[in-house]
Length: 99
Image (cartoon, rainbow, N blue to C red; front, side, top):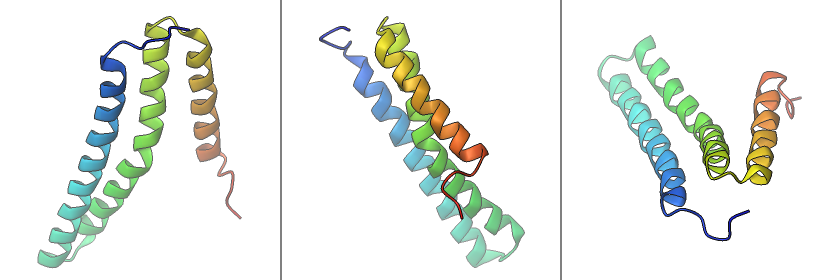
């Protein structure tokens, strides 16, 4: 494990979170505006898409972390990130935690 990460590591992960948060916000805001103007199925789908973007953002962040760890040849944390990603995906597919 390297003691010092490359300078772009944290910036890349922060960028992934920022893009996901802003994209989700703007898509949901577009859905709200569409709901006020046309009040149709498109508005509801835009709002749903915004929520899905916000839900997918942490998963994409874990994937980006895994790629960056493997790129730095930090296999231990790369595999830990891969395990967390697998848990997140299996939880989504099999609806773990729902009643």
